[in-house]
Amino acid sequence: MRRHAEVLGLLLLLVISAVSFIAWIIVHGVSARDQPTAVEALLARSLRHAAIPRSDRALVNPVPFNEAALEGGRMHWADHCALCHGNDGKGNTEIGRNLFPKAPDMTTSVTQNLSDGELFSIIKNGVRLTGMPAWGASSHAEDDQTWKLVHFIRHLPRTTADELDHMRSMNPTSPMKQRETKAEDDFLNGTDALSSAGESAPSTHRKEPR
Image 1 (cartoon, rainbow, N blue to C red):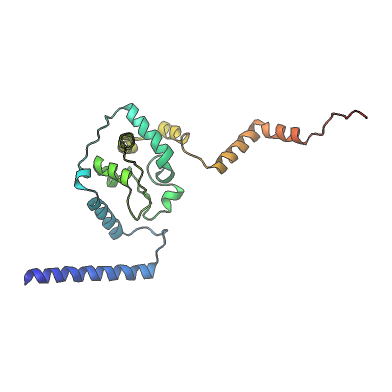
Image 2: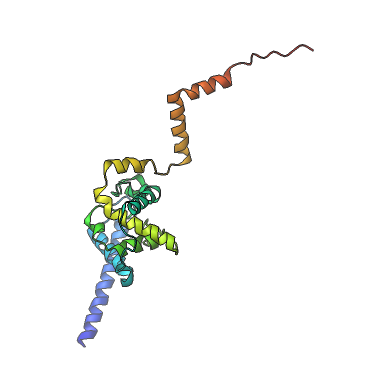
């Protein structure tokens, strides 16, 4: 009888929680501009932890930590991850700020306290209902690259200014940005003016009379 009452009480609590959440959504809307509440953040982290298999959480990084591994992770991060997370991992980018939930500051204990296996699983498999995609394919080479990223994520709190400068040179740019940069370089170097002058200058070649 007592067990039956506990189950009913739990079900009632779940129903009340669901109704309260729906009511909150109706009042506040579903804008991605809002900052997640503390309850949402706690619930999301708890669900993420529970969704990662225990065997994955216990994984140990098989890639030895050295400068080559760190550089591999740094290059991959700059080319694939910095668009949302920033070169410094703080998530202060145009995309990162406007996601819901926001891209986390990966230099803080919330991320740094995750196990290597949890970081690996999140990178490889992504997280549903967030902006985190599944990046890793099922291949040994892809897994090695993901483990190098885990090394770099551990290094993020100690990233230097020189490293950030180097990473900026590896960040991808859109075709429009590439054209803008080229136009600026041409202007500064004077090649744009010379090119325009060459195109607009009248021809001095005279046709021979027939």
